[in-house]
Image 1 (cartoon, rainbow, N blue to C red):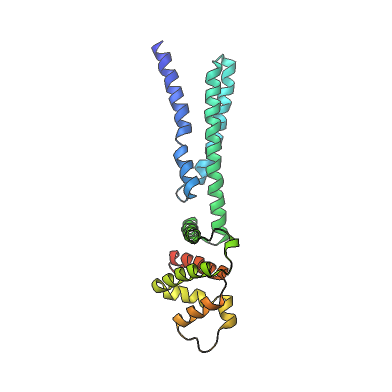
Image 2 (cartoon, helix red, strand yellow):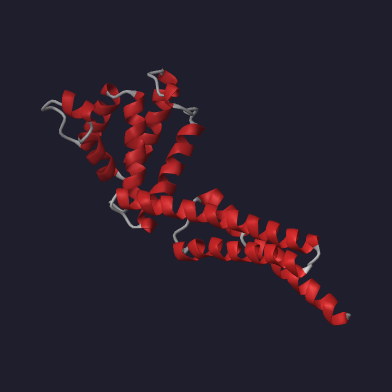
Length: 210
């Protein structure tokens, strides 16, 4: 009798923990989208293991196993399979996007984090959608302040992006010879959307060590 109780407790602890151990990983992936240290092969095999457990649970019916045990195992493993498939999908998507941009997954993720930081900073300035990137004076001032701050910290990077922009190249003249003058000229001729795009590109360059 004691052995039977111990076996029941061990089974339920194993079944429940099999599901619960995935929750922290899923939450981390959902929140950060970071799958750099995650093995795609592990989460490709994990759903197969879950299917095997579910099949085992169903076969227990023929051994006159109590139905609540069958349902408990099947539900826990079914949820674990769904969570592992979610992680696998995010992992494969990240790897695919990294390859598309000719980067390693780690390089792509660092660029992704920087992009998200840039987007958040623009949102803090009141720019939450493309519709906000109009030529309003308020938004223009906010964007120019960010660009000026970046210029003071990373002059070469900002100057490189400014001089390669379409607005600058279309309107440049011979009198513009210094980085500061080029920046001032760019702020005068560029739209808010173009300034925001330059800020975004500068953040990426900074993070990639350019």
